[in-house]
Length: 90
Image (cartoon, rainbow, N blue to C red; front, top):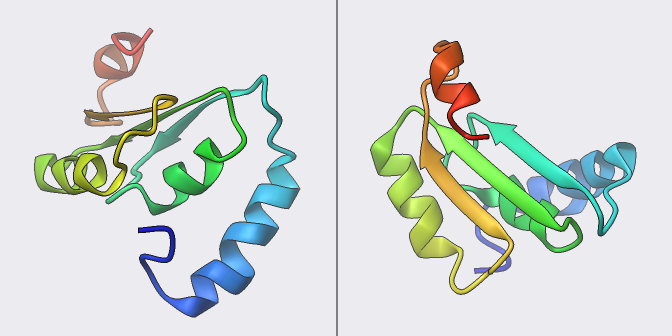
């Protein structure tokens, strides 16, 4: 599922965002509102750990299904408007 999503995202958005973030192999990244995890998967290509969250259980289920066996990528259902839920991530 490397190319799930549209070409504009893959040719413009993801490469530029990744470059701007200067993701390194030592980084631990939290993505809030990750939807089905498209950008989380892109970040996990370089980062040590990526945790993706979304308030939608359906989106999180899809993110997990689409992420295969990536060991440095985790997804959780979290309502980002609830500070306690964010803190519970660690």
